[in-house]
Amino acid sequence: MCGRYERRGDKQKIAEAFYAKGGLDEVDFGEDFDCAPGSIQPVVWMNKEGERALGLMRWGFKLPKKLLFNVRSEGIATANFWKDKFATNRCIVPASSFFEWKDSKKGPKSKYEIKVLDREFFGIAGVWAEWRNPKTQKWEKTFATFTSEPNGIMRQLHDR
Image (cartoon, rainbow, N blue to C red; front, side, top):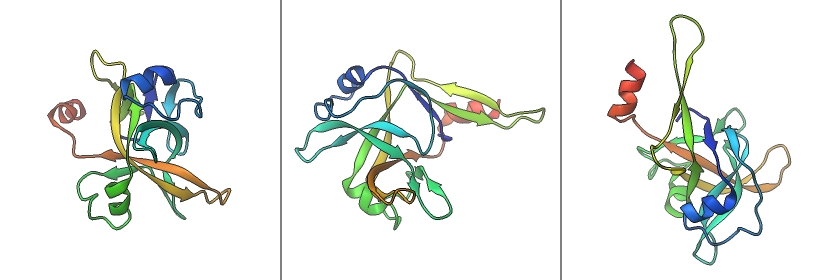
């Protein structure tokens, strides 16, 4: 995934789709047709009571010189920055589609929207942690989404 996704539907539909029971009274959000790194988005996570809950988190871990919003799934269990988060703080990022861009030899990149047919939502795997926002110095829940090598369908799309 290249850094943008779309999320349609209200919190009740998302909670039902991902069997989230907790957090519904604490969160409020609308649809987002251009979810971007750095934005606040709903995430399904396991709360202290051990149930799936819906919560709002910031997309991306802000480091001094970059924003880490994607993590390669290959090697995540052993990578220093990610291994503890992966072991204890996995989450699901509800999405309706995501976007990929293909370089064009004749002008701007082409944007492709990828959806799962016959599904209103799908889940993007993620990890989360409490992270200090460098702008506010406050701790907040923050997440990153997994990426991996493209499968055959995605390679065909890219090779067109």
